[in-house]
Length: 479
Image 1 (cartoon, rainbow, N blue to C red):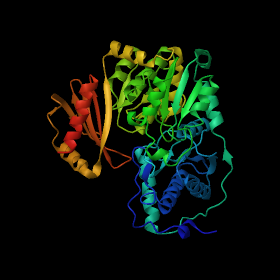
Image 2: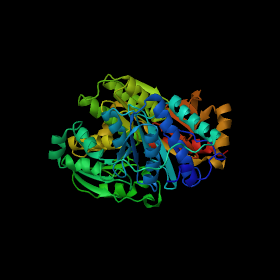
Image 3: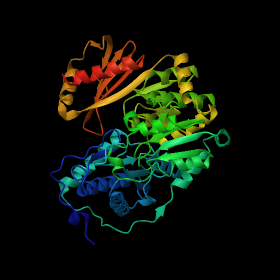
Image 4: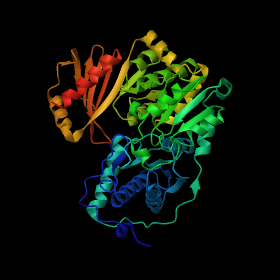
């Protein structure tokens, strides 16, 4: 049997493999090639062996092409280093894997997924023994092991072997998930869920979970499609127009839900067809869990999560910790017990007692449970939170980094503006990018950790002001 090196070109001239805020990602055939994947999985295998010889490692892939091939590479590398490999059965949602790591007491997990990125992207996520994303010290070590392998220019000391038998991880995940939910209320509520799987790995998991709880589900884009219908499987308002229409056209109590390509992110569509902001969705979950007695510890959120979450948590006597962007920082708060739940600006949410990484499946089911309690009036509950705690409108957009936006961001980091959208900048922080604190919200500009983009995040007291603030942020990057 041929070695990996015999099957693949040399990797020495390629750019370094770097892990961003959520793993390593790149364009298929350009940055993400068989040779580079072989080097990366070999480094991960060595890293696992250094920390936990003979450890159990969970390996899976999403619905993108070549997933099975990459899983074979990873299994061969891990087995060669003495690991005990648990291979997920078929395309698998990332939260199913992270829950399995957490529940089984495995030492690590590896998922081939590019999450919400466009179809041409491929990616690899690595998780630690808690089921949370790795911290910087661990990814630095893996990157160093990749570089060391390239310098030695030696063939990886393993050959492609037979795949270990596949393991059903979905059934135990759903069993454990049901224990977190008020299934009796959901079953008798008559609520209907319109679920947009965006052709991703959440299909067959979110809808199955809800049906097992007695909920009627209409599924959109449920068929597996490696091209995701020609667009990125990212549940943002422009990509959820059909979901919004179907929710508006549904009579009776209804809520719309969507998950991204690997189902670690979620989105919510209210009864009037409006897409909730990520801040509103997290605030709903914090309020719901606190009122039902299932959230008794603190809440961790990112810098660019809106202040509504903070105010809702405070109303329940819960402390809030703000962290750097990237869910791995929130995972550390869950692991330490400093937080019992965590949420972020891009649709990530985790409940510490169930898992330590973002879980769009759990979040979607909890929203469905809340919708069952409210007879579908999710939008009304959001309006109530705004009336009680103050309006918070949040949004995000992005510009291509190659169009001068990256250079503009560098200039702004050196000389931040004094005003944005007529608001005075009260403080400028350079953590994670450029964060401008304003009297009535914020503006943040930062380079993406997963795509060649510069992202713009903002909070404002109303939707019109938010639109102006986002436009002002884009204007700063195009001067």
